Length: 88
Image 1 (cartoon, helix red, strand yellow):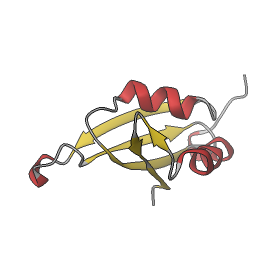
Image 2 (cartoon, rainbow, N blue to C red):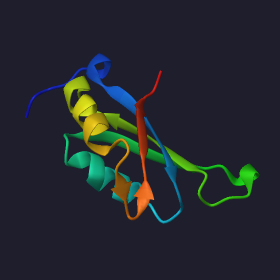
Image 3 (spheres, rainbow, N blue to C red):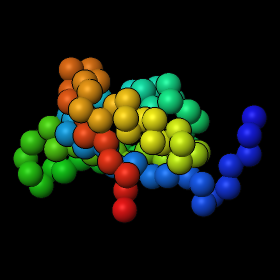
Image 4 (spheres, rainbow, N blue to C red):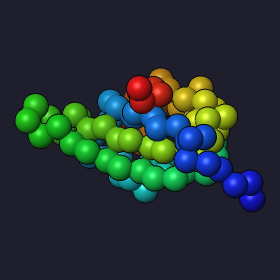
């Protein structure tokens, strides 16, 4: 396996989903595009809506992350429309 430097890793913001999507679901979906370094999921409870969830996914390479953005942004996962963007 290729070795990746920390600088090569890209963090992605994933939004627009509900509690029906787990960190494991995100890991599996993004794993189709390359190696996933980490997945963190969060809820926006203050908005009073279970659809206010978002996650941060870190891919091991920018090339794989770009492929994940192209492949998953605007697509459905478990019936939920995903928004996938490069985290600034």
